[in-house]
Image (cartoon, rainbow, N blue to C red; front, top):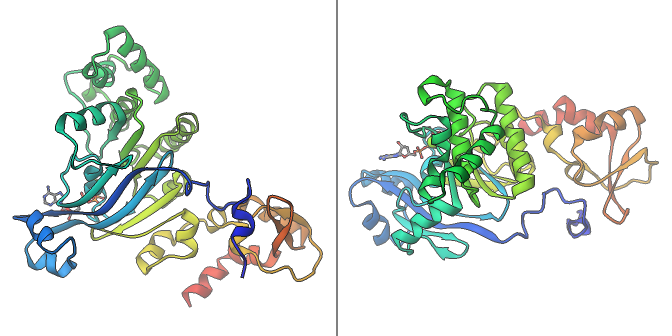
Length: 364
Ligand SMILES: Nc1ncnc2c1ncn2[C@@H]1O[C@H](COP(=O)(O)OP(=O)(O)OP(=O)(O)O)[C@@H](O)[C@H]1O
Ligand SMILES: [Mg+2]
């Protein structure tokens, strides 16, 4: 067996972008949201434990059930799951837009369910940004004023807030439409106004509920790039809901997969693809371009003494060296940060991966 420690401690060579060691920004501790009569007392009486059958028998909807997770400072944390699996409800619980029935939400270690309403409003206004699936733009305000609106609530003067609004208008590609009203914009443009509006306040933690799903593929990709660009500059903590695993892979540090209100698995895209916890998770990752997700580390075997045609780092994705290893026709050494070989990847293993042979074996 290979020891991850051989290279996890080095500067390069982690399969993960290294979010593990960052401080926790927001945590959910056994969070429940049940809809229905006496939902909170139902789960309190059971000491925060109940099966789906219990919930259903009590006539309640188990929108979020026993969710434990930690979102780390500066990471892009993606939530995926089928429609109705509880993604939006969970994210609304995180900002207390929906009051959880049970459990704790900790923001920088402080219990969000215990802070005063005034403190909560302050937190939402200055430190949280939100873009929702069906966000409502203010129909009587034009683009500029919609985007400047949260800044006027913060008490900023007109010149300052308009200057900031124009910055984010540029960022989301809406220049020239400052004076349009929401009804004069396409769905995608309206969504960009919502994104710009939520960015105007420079939030520390940013909740995005399928923000790009109404955009056409080209614009969607641009917005994803924009998000990544912003992230390298601003290092926000981002909680992002999407149905699209390709989008998740592009953006995610880690992905949480939800089913029937529960979080089934949390991991890097590669962990989910290589080790799906359930068939449901495997189904989500089925059509993924595995060479773009799987790293040399996952594919390597012990060196067997054969000559090497090159070297790669453990975290190099297969797609980044597939052409060169196949044309070299020799195994590549997988080397850690100090240049020490920790294994090798063979051209055949790469060809099998590209041909989906490994996948077919796993299915057999
Ligand atoms: N206010 C409410 N009252 C009753 N049930 C609700 C309420 N809000 C959500 N639900 C139920 O909770 C479950 C989770 O809903 P939620 O909107 O969180 O799902 P989702 O994963 O975001 O779905 P989608 O991908 O369609 O947006 C669903 O069964 C939904 O019907
Ligand atoms: Mg939703």
